[in-house]
Amino acid sequence: MATAEEINGVIDLIIDKMRDNISSLGGSAESMIIEGDEEPTYLERYPGFTGFPIFFVVPLGAGGDSMKQSMSTPDLIHTFKVTIIGFYKDYTVEGSLRSTRNYGYNLIDLFTSPHNHLTGDSCAAYIIDPVLQCGYWRVSDYIIHDWIATLTIKTKTGGSH
Image (cartoon, rainbow, N blue to C red; front, side, top):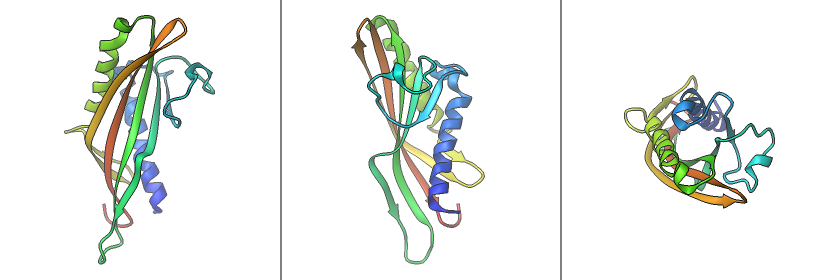
């Protein structure tokens, strides 16, 4: 299988796991999970916007994909980051500060030990060294709260898993 297909498979596993656990992230079946732009200027103008919360998955951000290969094997060992962002709407800072932070930690819990191994039909990966940031900003008469989780992914392509 081609390297791109295997890496895309890892990203699909992350999105699927988020979708399967969307209520723990404060979302519902209608919540959008998008592989795309990490911080759109106008969230409510995003194509197909269905309401808050909205989630973005940004593969290969912050440093690209570092690959290592030994001389005796076709396997490539990949290390790359995936940034995941959740956006929530409220009318006060205090209204969602704690709950937004909790949703961010719930995302981290989905992908850390003992759940840090992702396996699919054509790929497998480990998630290590997560980082969580939380913030908010005012947009006219409301507040957008967000969490940004950065997951480091280690996976092998090109041969045995």
